[in-house]
Amino acid sequence: MKNSRHIVTIAKRELGAYFASPVAYVFIVIFLLLSGFFTFMVSEFFRREEASLLSFFLWHPWLYLFLVPAVGMRLWSEERRLGTIELLLTMPITSWQAILAKFLASWVFLALALFLTFPLILTVNYLGDPDNGVILCGYLGSLLLAGGYLAIGSMTSALTRNQVVSFILSVVICLFLILAGWPPVTRMLEQWAAPWLVQGVASFSVMTHFEGFQRGVVDTRDLLFFLCLMGFCLFTTGVILRSHRAG
Image (cartoon, helix red, strand yellow):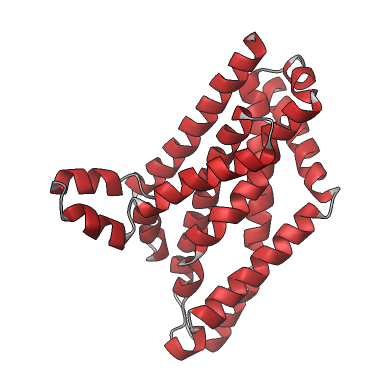
């Protein structure tokens, strides 16, 4: 009970810090504008004559590629730059509590931005008779995808004081996780690699595991992939922070 109270306290502080500056509002506006643009303009939503949000979720791995690292880059880099990380880690809390609290605060912020796209749900329901179960499943997958990217951002943020370096590292890692299962890349690998190697590389791709959610299928393997991705990156963040603490 006491542990959860510490996590909630830090999470509230972090979440409040987002909205204490214009950064949060700029991020939300950009996300909503880009989501609408890619859904209705690039994907030709109205020409498809299909009451679904497949064209909306299709772009999320690419939208999050830059937007989520922009949120995650400040998690620990700013603490290290300002010298407040020492104060935070000397408080009567464990490293994992601080890591989890900061991660959850940022994840809630991303969930709020995603929730504000609800007019798209109203739009497709007005225009047709969509399967809302598939849409909700897509939102679940999108939230897990954002959490995976964010955990990577947390890990890279703990590595350096420079937020720009953290951002670039996070984008590179997330891009690798996209391209690993991107059809053009897998077709290229099939020309010289064994099928089991191609499948192994593709299994690490967020695209491979996100596709099921877009179709409305909740596969345990896909859930485990995103949860393991978040768990591994947050665990690595803890290892990095403990090394700073020891140093």
